[in-house]
Length: 100
Image (cartoon, rainbow, N blue to C red; front, side):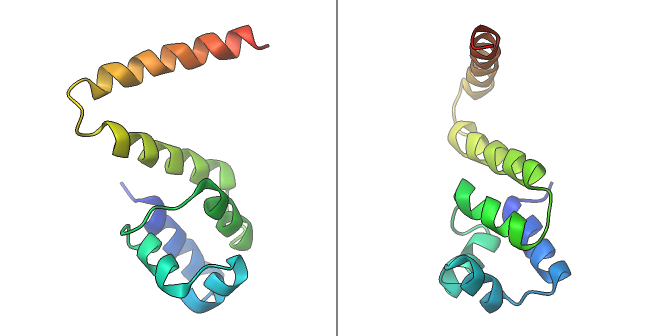
C-alpha cells in the first residue's frame, strides 16, 4: 500500500516537476515538501488538493487516501480502534441520511 507522500512523489516525477519547481508552485519550502513525500511530515488536505491540481491528478482518490492515512494515524495504536471506526461509520451514515 502506497502512502500519499509516495503517490504524490510519483505523480510529480511523472508530470516532470522537480521537487524545487513543485515546492515553488505551491508556495512550500523544498525541505518541507521533501519530508512530506518521504512520510516524515504530514500533508494538509489543502496541499494535497493543490498538488493534485498541479500534477493534473485525480484529487478525489488522493483526498480519500489522505483521509484514510489520517484516520489510521489516530487509531492504529488504540485498543478499540476498529470498533471506534465502525461506530464512526454508522454515525456518518446517520448524519448523511438526516441532512438530505
